Image (cartoon, rainbow, N blue to C red; front, side):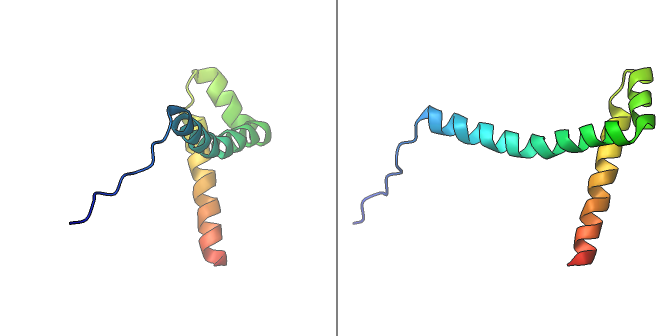
Length: 76
């Protein structure tokens, strides 16, 4: 009979560091695109300030990321 394989014990620090790294790697590009849009598209910044809603910014980020993805796929 085979013995069950034991997984190595991982500390909570390893898990927390990995989770923080994944979150940072996901949010950093979104924050960069949001900042870039606010600087380069004052209309979106004015909408966000006037309505107190981040929905126009989220829409602009999604549209920009969508265009970038389409361009990348067309390039490949």
